[in-house]
Structures are given as structure tokens and as C-alpha cells.
Image (cartoon, rainbow over all chains, first blue to last red):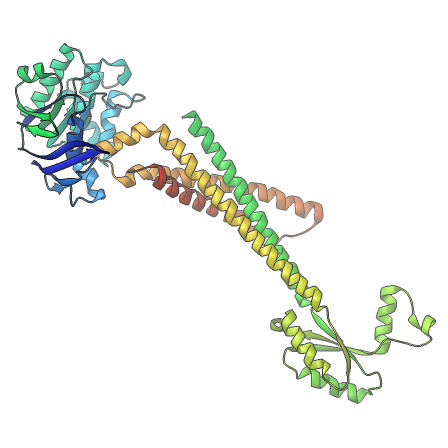
Length: 216
Length: 271
């Protein structure tokens, strides 16, 4: 489902990856750990095709970083959801509108939007707060809205960039349980974290970025 | 967001001012051209002939001139008619001073429309001057050359100014769009993230550009309509091309807004 073949990436003169190889199968749950600045977020951005390797190739489903056309990138992103440490929600809109935004912006018909938003809000257990403004929610709840939004287009893969980074331990566990539940329904999850205790508590395949390499 | 609103108002106003200037320049050019056409329609040669010619010789000379290339119509002005015109024009009779009529008979030759240019008129005058019965050929060649030269300068200056204000308006629309894009950068970032297509992200900005441009055009059309009414009421003049100058700015404003938005999107929205 995902393959990185001899991927090299650098920012200016700084080498981030020097020929990494990586493969992920459908339905897997993988943690990527490593010190700050080691390239965890860069790895997710490569998979999201937000950036491209200077050498090597990234394959995600039928898309290849070497041959993908700019017009195809939005179609890839509809099938690869992404959540961030800072949630990236629209603060002037309520929970329902934030999730509906993902469907509206990808051209879903309006009659489908309401039904699907209700489904994903139920899945993240926030349907009762659908009309709350996002700034009135706790950090954990905001992250659940962000996850609901990333699930709206039924992705086969969820990229989670430090999704528990801004949360207290209790909220972090809640988010991890949610991600595990989503994974249990067949969506693969590739998650970066610096909290290794979560890895022990919620087991999954562990990858470590060290000295520009990705190690199992 | 407030900055974006202010910028939108500035853009609509600038587009309106641009279009007003553009239209005034074009209206000036059209009306100058109309005046030039009127001058050209009056472009004739005065051919002074020997005053000893009898009626038959005058008729033969007239026919000879009529057969020349570029000649449209000929009017014979006898010495008496010339004297009458002179008296009407100056209120004096030269005979009281000189004791005789000093004005020679002449032909007034109107050229065909295609020949009403200084170059063609020069050539025809030269040919006529060679005729044995002709004493002198007079026409206001220098004046017509001057009119042509200045009409060309007016046109070039107009064109230069039009291009300048058009380019300024384009950059302004593009720059306003930058403020709007900056105000909505988070929404745009999220749209990119969740897989919205480029066209989907760009569409509202293009519509905004067309809307702002058309609104500027409507303001311009209204100002010009008031201006035209004022000219008609105050000076009883009827400037040419008014219908075009009413609908033209709205269409042109929309086009200006569209092109400015395209430019702004290319520069500031890296989708």
C-alpha cells in the first residue's frame, strides 16, 4: 500500500533522509518515533505528497511520486486522511461545519454530506456536540473533530502527526483508543509520536528515525 | 478580514477610475477622429485659372480636370462670385480701393474620399499645376499635415496611457487578492490538505475578481452617463459612441477583474 524506495530528502544543506526504504501493508498500525527534527513529519509529508524526494520514489496505492500529475494529488489526499498536533480546524465554524467542510470542498453532493458527517461524528463520539464552536471544546475533543474530518472521505490510510502532542495523558489515551478503533475497522494508521509510553500501552509496529535512516 | 474588505473597496474604486479614464481617453480619440474626418470631408483644392478664358474654354478645362484621377467634383467660381464671397467675408469691396476686381476665377475641386490625405492631395495638386490654363493651385496642405500628425500623437499618447492604467489596475486587483488569500490562508491550507482540487480553491477568487471588476464597471458607466447628460444639457453636444461607453465598462471591468485574479492566483496561491 505504501512503499518508500531509496528515498533521499534534504532541506537546504541538511540531509533528512539518506536512502530510506519502508513498506506498509493495508490495515497496519505503525508508529514512527525519533527525536525532534529527525524527520518524522517530513516522512508523513512525503507520503501525503506535499513534498517530493530528491532521489528515490514514494508509492501510495496507485500513485508514484515520480509520475504523479499535480491534478491527481487532490484525489490521493481524499484517500489519505491527515491529522496534526495543532488540529488545523476552522475556528469560526462549529463541529458539524468543520467536518462538512471536507466533504463540501471535495465536491460531495449536499444530501450525502449531512448523513456522512453524522456517521463520522458518531464514530468519534461527538454527535451531541455537533453545533458547538470548536474553540469551546477541550483539546481532546478538538482532535476528535480533526480525526472525524480526516475520516469523512473514507480514507484507506490515516496519517497522524503527533496527534497527542498537545494533550494531557487522559485525552491522549482517549485519542489512541479512537485511532485503534478506526484501525480495527480496516483503516491503516501511520502515526508519529515522541511519547513512547503510548507505544507500549497501545502496541503497533515501531519504526525509529535515526541518523537519516528509518530503522525497524 | 477587515483589511481585505477595505482592499476590495479600494479595488472597485480603482477599477472604476481606471475605466473612467480609459473611456474618456477613448471618447476623446473617437471625437478627435470625428473632427478630423469632418476636416477631411472639407479638403478641397482651389485652382486659380487664367481670367482670359471664355465660357467654352472654361467648360473644356473643367472636363479635363474632371477626368483626372482622384477628382470627385468641381465647382467653377467666376470673378464676380469670388468678389461676392470676399465682400461677404470681409465686408469690403476691393474695387473701391483698386478700381478693378483683382480676384481671379477658380475651380474648387473636391477630392474623392480615398484621396483626402495630404500626400494624395499634393500629387493631384502637382498634376493640376502643370495644366496650361492653371495659374496657381492652393490648398491647406500644411494644416492637414499638422492635423494628421497631432491626431497620431493623440492616439499614441492615449494608447500609452490606456496600457499604463490597465496594467496598474491589473496589479492592484492581484494585490487585493493577496490580502484576501492571506486572510483565508487557513481555509486554503485545509482545503489543500483534504483534497480540494485547484479549480475548486481558485473558483471563488476568480468570481470575486469578476464581481469586483463588473461593479467597478457599473460605477464607471453611471459616472459616464451623468457626464454625458451634463455635456448634452450644458453644451448641447452629442459625443459619439455613448452606448458602447455604457456597456463597455461593465464587460471590460469583468475582464479586468478576471485577468487580475488570474495573475494574483498565479503569484500568491501556490496550489
